[in-house]
Image 1 (cartoon, rainbow, N blue to C red):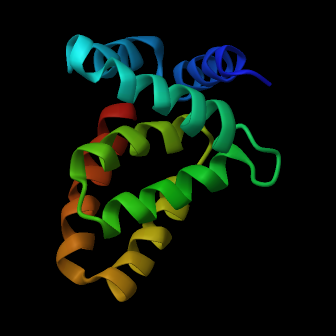
Image 2 (cartoon, rainbow, N blue to C red):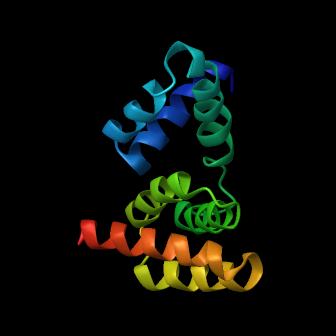
Image 3 (cartoon, rainbow, N blue to C red):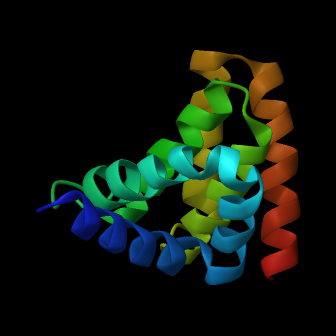
Amino acid sequence: MDLKQLTERGLRLRKQIFGEEMVDKRMSAAGDFGAPLQAMVNAYGFGDVWSRPGLPLRTRSLIALAMTAAMNRPEEFRVHMNGALANGCSPEEIREVLLMVAIYAGIPAANEVTRIAHEVIGKRG
């Protein structure tokens, strides 16, 4: 698959998971300066890695939540929190992931993302 095909596939999947409005907002946030990074995210992140058949999207979402929580990236966590719910992850599964984060990455990291998760779940109903 060539780079153009990866980019197109990645952009479709990214919009499926996060919604067109959120993807457009994130892609335009850094303007022309950030366009090369967004191209990488679309092609390699979502067109390649997220599109691989080895794990279902919901599992990839739970992994992304754990990693963004452990790396203390609350804004990325919030984005992936919405994606995880869209990919069929339940609040209970997400809570279990955040308990694992508390044990392996620390309670302060888990505290912050637990508040974010609670907020996102509340907004989505």
